[in-house]
Image (cartoon, rainbow, N blue to C red; front, side, top):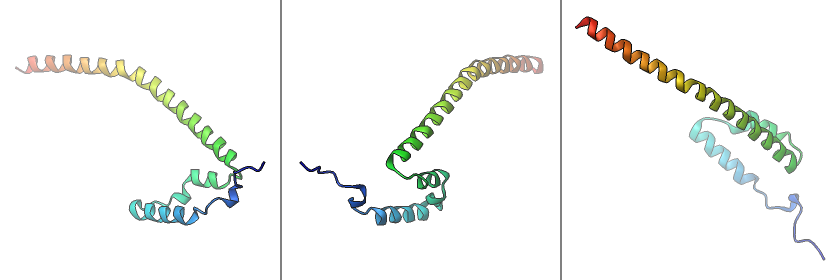
Length: 99
């Protein structure tokens, strides 16, 4: 029994489609995606598994960054509320003195 899966090299050639998309993106944004650091890293991968591993690592970094941001926001939220309350209180005091 033979497998119906074809080797990657026998897959249709999408290179012209990607090149056209990159050209259009550069026209619209003025940015060359091929020089983006992630594109350079992906270009250095030698297999689909290597690309997946790279992207999983990037996703993990993003999640860690979000967790740090959430902790910062949780800390900042009460601080900002206190500053707003103080500002309102001081503003009332200044208005009553200047009246």
